[in-house]
Image (cartoon, rainbow over all chains, first blue to last red; front, side, top):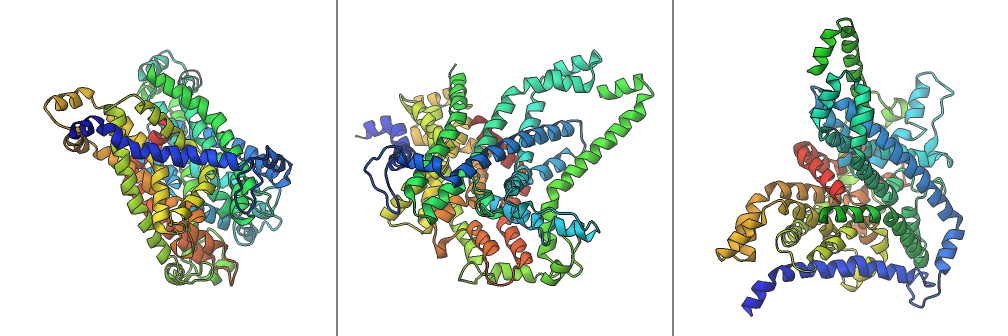
Amino acid sequence: MTKWLEDHLPKVVLAPSFIAVLIFVYGFIGWTAWVSLTRSKLLPKYDIHGFIQYERLFAAPRWDVAMNNLFIFGALFIVISMILGLLLAILLDQNIRTEGAIRTIYLYPMALSMIVTGTAWKWILNPGLGIEATVKGWGFESFTFDWLVNPNMAIYTIVIAAIWQSSGFVMALFLAGLRSVDTEIIRAAQVDGIPTWRVYTAIIIPSMAPIFLSAFIVLSHLAIKSFDLVIALTGGGPGFASDLPATYMYAMAFSRGDIGQAASSAMIMMAVVFTIVVPYLYSELRAKND
Amino acid sequence: MTDLAMSTARGQSRIGKVALRWLLYIALGLFALYYLMPLFVMITTSLKSLEEIRTGDLISLPREVTFDAWKTAWATACTGIQCEGVRPFFWNSVLIAVPAVMISTLIGALNGYVVAQWQFRGSNLFFAALLFGCFIPFQVVLLPMARVLGLMGVAGTIPGLIFVHVIYGLGFTTLFFRNYYVSIPSELTKAAKVDGAGFFRIFWSIFLPLSLPIIVVTVIWQFTQIWNDFLFGVSFSQAGTQPITVALNNIVNSTTGVKEYNVDMATAIIAALPTLLVYVVAGKYFIRGLTAGSVKG
């Protein structure tokens, strides 16, 4: 008996986690997928009724707004964070004496909760007492900056706060990438008299392609999961003008009592994440095995 | 260094180089201001009286520094119907985060040890399955988890939240330890086995003593994740067990009475302090966790 245990100890140690993952990740995904095919309302039902929830979802104006917002938010957030992060990384890579301190400053927002970030920016962007009022106080009476309460612009306030929070992190990724480029090649280029900006555009940046991919994966993952920031900053409002899929799902699950809609919207979110992440993970795992 | 050689070769571009250097530092300084501005505004606002907030502007320093808002935030601010400040919620977060971090780190270390050093048929498959779990949007498990917590009798309790955080933290903790242990030569394990050491003995006397850096990285990562969590907190807690992020959101968005911006800001800083402190004290490990967790993931 003890011999058996000794031989199988690694499996025994792994077993609880394995069972937990099986139930709480894959089983739960299965449960949600199943319920998304039923007519569940306040309580889950288990008789399958086809794709009725998905039909309702795609017909719902609020979901339409949420998906549109996800594309606007996701595109701007990812592109601007990457540009800003790369720019900051290149600036910091010029033998800056105070690099450590500056890096610390650029990256600290990443340690904050999205709720804290949302609360801070909600105060800064509020038209009554924030930036708008401050600039008006300087004598520019006609200055308006009411994005937070403007249904057409509210989603952009989330972009602003999210970039503030995550761009420093992208900088850290790129800085690590810049440091890993072979210094011999760079020195050779400099000896040949190639201007610095050409060294960057022709040699360094192209060699960082894997880092761009990682940054893209991380940022898109953050974008799709964005929930806290919206809740804290706009609450999805005005009305539901700044809803994202995550806030839609939450509203359906916990305040509207529409479990069918909650399940189907969660499945769509997962589908979006997986179309981005699965090919990446697959290639990563394969590269490791080779 | 090569810059210097080139600029002396072409003497007149020297002034250009110095100007460029200044421009660089100015740009870096402006960006630093951009990142610091919200923190600065939060701190100054929390030290102003409401009267001064209404009449003054966002970026001015407080004329009269008062800590009243901090006292209110800690002890008497209202979250919904109860008015005990964020103190009880701060302790809720501590009670959730400390055990959840410890348990998930311990299990992650053992899992990582097995996956890296005691591979068997299917152990890699397990690791891949666990990795996918890191990437799922948690919305997809919210509904069934709410029901299971109810069935287990821990719905709305702190043990329930600890359980949820441990389960969904396992992916990352295992990943961290696995990637760390994989770089330790397997000959070490083999030699120890030949000498008659068993599974736990090798873990305890060889691997654990080598693990301090990765333990620090994992603990910091898990603590930041769990302390800053809002989705699980808001979904699986009730009035007395809410974590501080949920309480902060309730205070800020409570619609009763006068809007006390200074109290909101003080509360937000209190909620941010533990993770900020960790970042300032152990920033190196924090960054290592961030990059390892997201690049390798």
